[in-house]
Length: 437
Figure 1 (cartoon, rainbow, N blue to C red):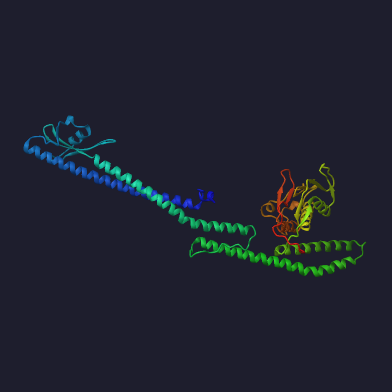
Figure 2 (tube, rainbow, N blue to C red):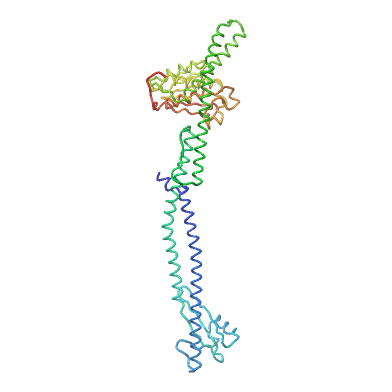
């Protein structure tokens, strides 16, 4: 939580940085304007003071013929070059020349000069250091005020943005829960805010409700169809059993009826898993024996012991198999479906490995399609054409039973080719029921 709080990529700090940048920009603009205004005012006051002193010096010199104490009499050659040039450029007797002598950091003089006779120039100098220091003090004061304002504004902006950040975080968490299958999750609209975030929350909640309703209708339809088909299907199975054994057409009918029966039973099993009514019946189970039996049911199995002996279409390798608390019927169903899927859609040899409480089923075919790896198994969709045709219920049922067991069932592709399904039974089922399932 602390890491997220101080994450610079968080919206709260982006908003705070934007507010700080805006405050700095405003402070800079205001500072420049105030500095220029104060500088012009100080320079204007200095010019007026220098002009008044020069006029007083000229008046006293014209009345007494003596140099005033606060003025100098110099020749044009004794004047600083910029001031001498300004004096030479004067066109009227009433005019005077000004020169701002700046030698940073502490020498600021405003010179005023006017000719008073043949090659005589009366000069007064006004010390502008006090005005310059006042201007510098004003600049420092404005910088300190801007920093103090930032110390207040940035935390306030972060706190104000925190509410928006929490609302967005709640929305993203809810969206992830919906994506993970929790269709009852809702963002909700807290408070009286009626802004864009509220509109997004309402839209996401409406989308989740519509999706939940559609999936519920789909599940009801699947269950209803399976139940409706079960009765006539039993009649077909009975009728197919009365057909002659040596008739090729009768054999084809029996095969198709059996396939249809398996499909309907799978649909009924999916509907029960979708309803969430399934509970695990937990017993202490020797995993090696259970997997060997399940693999034998799924296809022709030639067991390979720890020596690594191979042969047949399915190879079983036991590496210190554990005794785990689990539901043996569901584990057997999962392994049977995984092995059957590997035989049906992959390529031999199919390898089944039991390591502790982990079961791995691998084939050497083209591997799982990308959409299955990204989104998980989907009913009535097998993915890549190179993995053969099917109704896609086997892996869906396996995932459903793994969820009931609280186990982790993952699907990957081996680096050297082939699909790999891993069932990890290290965690016991979260909810157990010793009643019938």
